[in-house]
Amino acid sequence: MSVESLVVYVNGEYVPRAEARISVFDVGFLRGDAVFDTTSAWNGRIFKLDAHLERLELSLRAARIACPVSLEEVRGIIIETTRRSGLRNAYIQTIVTRGEPPFGVRDLTQCRPGLIVFAIPYVFILNPERGGGRATIASTRALPVQCLDPKIKSLSRLHFDLAMLQGKAAGMDVALMLDLDGHVTEGPGFNVFVVKRGQLFSPPEGILMGITRLTVFELAAEHGIPAREAQLTPYDLYAADEVFITSTAGGIMPLVEIDGRPIADGKPGPVSQRIHGLYWQLRESGKDAVPIFD
Image (cartoon, rainbow, N blue to C red; front, side, top):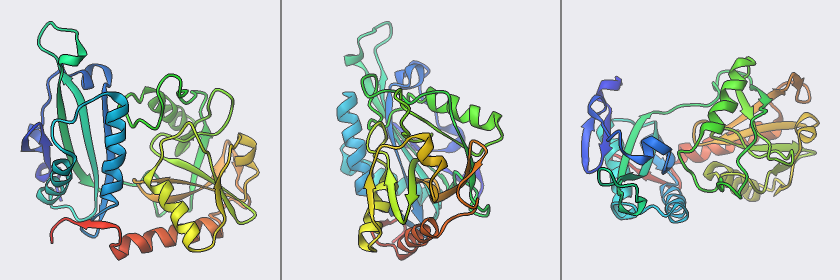
């Protein structure tokens, strides 16, 4: 699959990737004034598409952005874009921008919203062939809910980018973020879980309510693994039996080192590996998934 064959939906048209364009006056570009959602396909089926669309609708409502088409139409556009790109395993992003106002007008209520959908080959935050990832805790703090609630999946992501760059400069795979009180929140594009004495713990607030995170809680309940939300500090990460991250981009991915400290024996643990296996069994089964080509 070459990048030239990929198709992008832009404001009513399906176009080749190389021809995808938006206006430089779109405030989604100028200000990051846009919301988005990311889902994925595996074996020709898009996972939990309706849950992702529901989250997109909530982000739109909270950000006071009107979608230019109905959510049912967005659903069809996501499927069709992925189908036209010929991808069975795909990373799919849907972006709704506030759009472009009339020329010379600063009134955001006069913007005409835009819709962009693209699908690219499936990506992993952490290489699945590696035996776990290494992380650092970034000095850049997560945005407090009083400024921009992270439950709104917005394109205002400079804080995430700064954390990612700090992690890369330190030679780490990923960066973890704290809130202003020093509690663990999330990372750029992923949620965090700690395993202690066989139980799963994940931060309760200051985070995006990840669909993969929710899937972990569902799998844990189904298979009798204790799991609950809890405030966590860096100490809880360092002293954990296991730590793993969850994302549409990769599923369940163990961390084996944080800030130079091995997590337990420095290898992926049994609970993380079990959750990883259950997640990919679910993906392989096609349950909770919408066919692209059927």
